[in-house]
Amino acid sequence: MPAKKKESADSVASATRVTAGGVAVAPRLAVRKTYKLFIGGAFPRSESGRTYVVADSKGQFVANAAQASRKDARDAVLAARAAFGKWSGATAYNKGQVIYRIAEMLEARRDEFAALEVPASEVDEAIDRLVWYAGWTDKLAQVVGGANPVAGPYFNISSPEPSGVVAVVAPSEPTLLGLVSVIAPAIATGNTVIVITDAPRVAITLAEVLATSDVPGGVVNILTGSAAEVAPWLASHSDVNGLDLTGLADAKLALELEQAAAETLKRVRRPAPAPDWSADPGLAPMTAYLETKTVWHPKGL
Amino acid sequence: MTATISPLSEVTRSDAALRTFLHGLPGVDRVGADARAAGLGTRSIKTTAKAWAIDLAIRMVDLTTLEGSDTPGKVRALCAKARQPDPGDPNCPSVAAICVYPSMVPTAHEALRGSGIHLASVATAFPSGQAPLKVKLDDTRAAVAAGADEIDMVISRGAFLSGRYLEVFEEIVAIKEACGKAHLKVILETGELVTYDNVRRASWLAMLAGGDFIKTSTGKVAPAATLPVTLIMLEAVRDFLDTTGRKVGVKPAGGIRTTKDAIKYLVMVNEIAGDGWLDPDWFRFGASTLLNDLLMQRTKLATGHYSGPDYFTLD
Image (cartoon, rainbow over all chains, first blue to last red; front, side, top):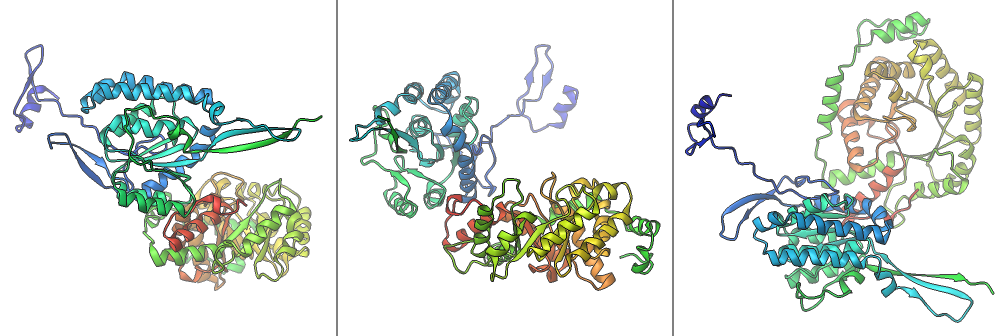
C-alpha cells in the first residue's frame, strides 16, 4: 500500500516517521508479546481463556498474562509425567550438558532480562547457579549413594533415583534467581517439574530460554497465576510425587498444601526460615526429591 | 430413509439389485458430517450428568485385549478387572463384555462364570478377514462352542471395495447362521472403506444381512473409530429401525482413550440415534485404555482431587 494512502487512512496516528528518502510513513504497529503458559514444550493459552494484567514497577500496564486454571495444572501433570521416563533415564552427563546449555542460553539473553528490570547481578547469580547444578548431575550419586558394607557375600549398592513429578511454588522475589533455584535442583536429579509463579514476564522469558536449550518438552512446565488457586490441585493430585513450598510465603496456604500432600504421601520441602536465595544452596534442594534404591547382588565365593 | 427402495427382501435377490439399492442410498455430505460431529463434541457435560455418563460408559465398555502376546494370565487379570473395575469402590459398575481372540475364549469363559459379563470373541480371520469362508465359519463355530456369546466378525473389505456386495452379504448371513444364539457384531473397518458413502453402504449391507451390531474398526488400522464415522453408522441404525422395525447396535472401537472422547460419543448417540441406544445392549465401546481414564475421572468426581494411573491396573 502506498505510504500516502496509509497515512490518510490512519488519521489517528499522531507521530509520523520519515524514511531515508524523506517519505512520511505511519508509525509502525507495536508487536507486543503475549505471555502464555509453558506446558509440554509448547506455549498454550490458559484452557480457561483467562488473563490478568501485569504492571511494571511504576504501576503501568505492560502485558496481559495467562492465568492458569486447575485444568492447565492437570495438563501440565500429564506433560510432566510423559516426559519423566526419558528425562530420568537420560545419563547424568547428558542432563549436565542440557542444564549447562540453559546457562549458555540465559547468558545470551541477558538483555531481555535487563529489559524486565532483573538486575544484572541477579542474572549472573542465576547463570552461575545453573552451571553449579550442571556440575552436580554426575557427582551426586557418589555423594548420597554408594557401596554399603554388609555381613555376607553380597555387593550392596545404594543409588539415588528421582521421585517423579514435582510441583513447585516459585518465590515472588527474587524472580529469576528464585525460579532457577527451584527448577534446576529438581531437574538436575532427573525429576520433571510444574512451577507455579506470579512473575509471568520473567518466568515465560525463562521458558523461552528453556525451550531453546535442548530441555525436552514437559521436563519443565510453567503455570502463571495464583498459587492459592492452582497449588491445592497439584498438592492433592495423585500423580504428583513431590511438592516444593520453599518459595511460598503464605504460611496458612502452605500448611493446607502440606496436609493435602500427606494424603498421597508426597515428598514435601518447606524449610523454615525461608532461605537466602543468594547463599550457597547446599545439597538439600537436590536430595529432597531423590529416593534411594538399594540393590543386593551376590558376590559368589 | 428413501422412498425409492423396493421391499427390502427384494434388494438382496441378486448382486445387481443389491448394488442398485446400496448405490441408491443418499450420499453423505462429508463436510456436513464432520461439522455436525465436531459441533456435538463441544457440548459441556458436568457434575451429576458427567457422573451418570461415566458410569454408563463403564457399563458399555467391551474390555479388549487382542494382542499376539496375550496369555491366559493376562486374560484372567482382565476378567477380574471387568468384574470389578475399581477395587476401591464396590459401587463401580462392571463392564459390558470382554473381547478376546478365540484361543483365549475358554480361559475367559471360566473366569467370567456367573458374573453376567458377556464374552465376545473376534472371529473370521480377524483382523484381515483374508481366509476361505470355510475357515471363517469354523473359526466362528469354535469360538461359540468354547463359550463366546458375542462374535465380532470382519467383513471382506477387498470384496466390498471391488463391488462384490452379494458375496459380502452372503458371507455375513453364513456367519450369522454359524453363530447360532450368539450375537453377531459386524466390523466394517471404516479406516479401509475410504469414503463416508462406503461406510453408509457397508452399514446397511451388514444390517440387511442380519448383524446385531455394526462395529467401526478392528483397532489394527488407523484411523480407527472417529466421531463422523460413528455418526453415519448411528444414522444408519436409526433409519434401519424406522424402515424395518429391527434395532441394531453400534460399537465404535479403537482410538477412544479419554473420558472426554467417550462422553462426546454418548452425546452423539443421544442426539442422532436417540436415548433408546443409551444402553449397553445397543451401544458399546471397544476399548482397553479408556477404562482406566473413566475410572480416574470417576475417582476425581468422588474424591474431589485428581487421580493418577498408578492407582489402577495397567491391563
